Length: 295
Image (cartoon, rainbow, N blue to C red; front, side):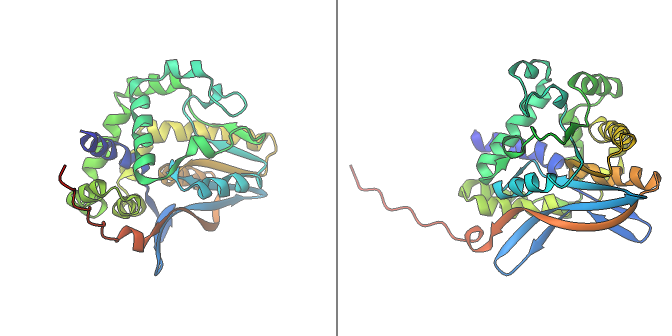
């Protein structure tokens, strides 16, 4: 029963974690990638810089569950900005970087379901969660997302839902972007976090523009990005020159397009490892169980 639940949650949550690329003329911007070395496989997220006059905006990609060291690196990185615009539906309710208990009462069931999905994935993959390790109490952090009420109203108006969006993305993934179902089931049954991560990492790192096909018009991507751009405009008007935007990397193909239309030009790019997978551990054969002695 637990395996069936985990498989269902993976099918629902993976499209929301799966990231993308976007084509601009002859350029292809990768906001997330899979990098192989002899001993390891890395899932890496990008820090992509855009400049316009004396203003620099960095799109700081995120995956919501990752190695603890990844979030520690991000916390250090955030110190370099005048302001960091962060995503979190309802995040305007935060007090000292934490969501008050009563804030969860307005959430729809789908948001709770998604939270459950991420928690189960954290455990199965032996990873940690963004909300547990990102320091949202930093003075330069500014909420740049929809409120819960705004999010719910827009979804109702457009006839959308989080689960529906995720399942639609899952169905629209081409065969190369989907994990092998039998290998995935075997990895889940093995109880080996590295094996499971190895079976999922290509799906997360090598999306083929499935999200970008219609994400810009969706609430979960497009409307939230629009809100972020409005906050960005206010911060630039206030005189901020070095601005970080900390959002899930799947938001960035659309967000990059919006920045370029405003006259920004891409000026730099670097990578931060989010997952480190040990190939030897991932491919290790399980030790045979000792024969049980007759009672």
